Length: 184
Ligand code: 5GP
Image (cartoon, rainbow, N blue to C red; front, top):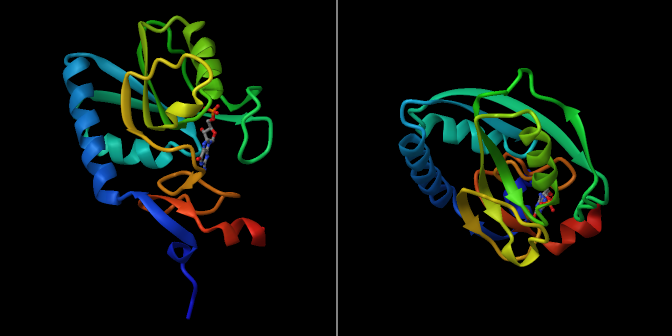
């Protein structure tokens, strides 16, 4: 029988239903906070594309979408804190309300770099929505205004998050079986 991606998952930490429920709540918060305003959601690629797509459909705020792609130097499972912009925003954000959408904040170094970079462009406001955080690990102050879930300090995949570019399409957040790393 064909082996599916699900077979590589040891444990599901957050089900699809839990994620959807939380995103609907966060969208309601955004709708309330930005009533009457137009917002640019800035997704951080690649991981945030799934969060963006689902969040977008719960939102009733007048939103535009833009994306940035960054890469942090270092190994696949460890961030170094040195961030390179691979794709910048398409438009100027001066005077605009910006909400950065992140999949996960681990050390906070990537986000911290991004926020300093975006703040220098003089937006009217700058806030962060992060679906996941690993609180034990946060090494720098990260002002996440809209927060989905705190998860334990384990390497997770699914819902946009990858291991070697795979597993992003799983609709839940899970932990890989140790054997999967051994095969790589
Ligand atoms: P930070 O700079 O906050 O340490 O790292 C954030 C980035 O590291 C995330 O955007 C993500 O790309 C990656 N990352 C951190 N933890 C995990 C994890 O558990 N699973 C996956 N797939 N990526 C992670």
